[in-house]
Length: 463
Image (cartoon, rainbow, N blue to C red):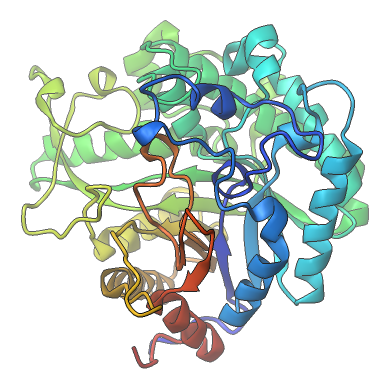
């Protein structure tokens, strides 16, 4: 049986900085990604998101392409700088109007909006004036911004995601320094992660106390995690794989579902890991109405205690020296142009791990997808590798559901090729090809196949 539940949510996803463009139009302020991408050497080929896919001007065309694909949901993010240009001051009526038009158009086409409040594009003023996600006041600024969004859009938006991948914000921005604000530290990521969780909790508190009863919506968070498979069945490797998952996903999920960080993190990170007050724990616990998951790949995990885990050519979820985990991949696994291994069974195992650890929560796969080097031929784009990826991963998802995981929906990343952060326009994740010279969109074979899957609610389709 390859069918999905009858009420399954079929969607696709994007984020504001990656697609919108309209850099200084419509009253938009400057974000940390606007600033970071101007620093020589930070982004491949010197690319920026200043034009991106020009969705700011072409959103009507894009919604039509979504309708053609048959999706019943679209996940996108709001640019904080388009709504409150300096992060805390006046609200931009032009920004509100832009997103209102987009939301209304989606609803007219029977596409349910799933809105992410924060997908990494912090107003640069908050970085300079508040210390970014290391600042004591940042969680309150985020809650205020969320309040503005709920009040303007909550009459039509009933699915909210507070933060996208706080692990990435904390680790790549404040640990490894490859994302803005470019800080390298083994302590700052834990402080940033703590403040991100508090921002999430405060935004949810605002929604539940002021809006949820009237607007009848749901709110959650989207965390990212790769699967960690034990390299061997030795107790040490089994423990290492579990520890790797705890430093990656449980870092942000445990406080929400269990009230505090995992014991393995408390033990290993020590005083560098902040403490929650009793009031903060109460606000955090049960602060997500669904479990949002972004998933892309799998690695083997082995115990690296008393070894140099930095020998690994792969980064790890959380800070490597705090985990003592060695990561590797099977050389036989195929890889995407991100050099990420394609391992559909890892997706299934992760969904089932979440189901067990967090007591059968409703799971929304908020991102899943792959990058390949697609090229048009005679006006068409045949992305066979991506199509195979989706077939495998959706089959893994379907197996997890049949094994009892409560998976409610799936958002393919991404709707179209876009600005892939530090890789600029050199990596293509889209189901729609974008010519970045002309901005023409072309549905790829994967988009047409996905349309058939959605129409039939089943993987038993041709292609």
